[in-house]
Image 1 (cartoon, rainbow over the protein chains, first blue to last red):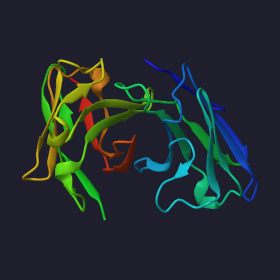
Image 2 (cartoon, rainbow over the protein chains, first blue to last red; image 1 turned 45 degrees about the vertical axis):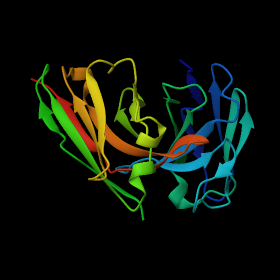
Image 3 (cartoon, one colour; image 1 turned 60 degrees about the horizontal axis):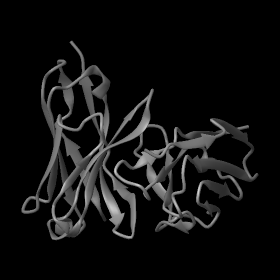
Image 4 (tube, chains in turn cyan, green; image 1 turned 135 degrees about the horizontal axis):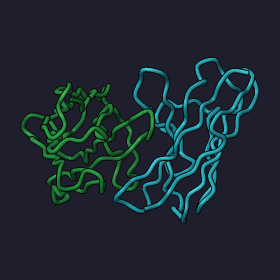
Length: 108
Length: 122
């Protein structure tokens, strides 16, 4: 089973600034990596698939990069609605699909 | 608009059974691969299992912790997918999400239901 590890666990950033979240896979997942956003009381929402392709309706300030074992989600200019928990997920080697433990993005 | 609506959650005793249903609309359900994902405060998001479309064989796969206890099935005439949970354990307590697999080239989850809370407790 591929283990996904996200860092940091919590990231404090001011509105308008850039946020960079990391995800590492225990073995290569090629570019089969997705990012999700989850707000309190809501289901997760797909942001990025294929490591770098934004899902339908996702603003351009969200971008993903990386391949193999190292991935990054960047939010270029944080808006108030972006403060949430973010998860990465691999779907290269399945079953099982595996998720990271999440990074909480909070207001500084 | 794609909608996934789970039902059937609740409180069940250890060793008991429960069936979750997920009614789908706004998509060509017969072609969709569907999964269940659960979430607990302690273990985060955990994939439970998946059922392929009948055109792709209709087969199922399960995560190790639930294999041989949980069964996923589908009724394409009702646009509904089911999660039959047997021999429930306290560790199965979670919010269970019905999710749609994006596309076969990218097996991410592009639509999620609102979740059904399952509590396993005596």
